[in-house]
Length: 166
Image (cartoon, rainbow, N blue to C red; front, side, top):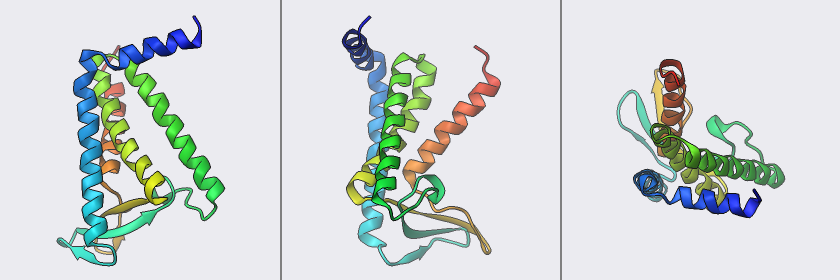
């Protein structure tokens, strides 16, 4: 089977009726992420907002990947990391297409969050993180809505692998 035939099969499986709900879910996640980041960028650029003793809104620009790993001033490394992230997302979309219905939910929330952060990397050259959880002087890594969905999807995937036998 040649590449073109395989690509056409993949394309037709992606737009199956059963996938429409998952694509809508992915779109909603991207929209929630975009709208929250837009509001934070417009209203909290140089301000910290204190909700309570455990949560702050504090805008931080992350040029690295999750938790600030691989942050760099080198545009070459930044572009290679961005290209790698894009490749992983394409692979996840392929896995989504060939997965069973129950797994499609997991992949759709991971893909939605990942696409939200990838779009920020392309538009802003960094990802705006703004949710600061803390207890006394201990601060967790600052994160955003897309990170919540990516992390939730990965945790569901891991828990599913422990408790669901194929």
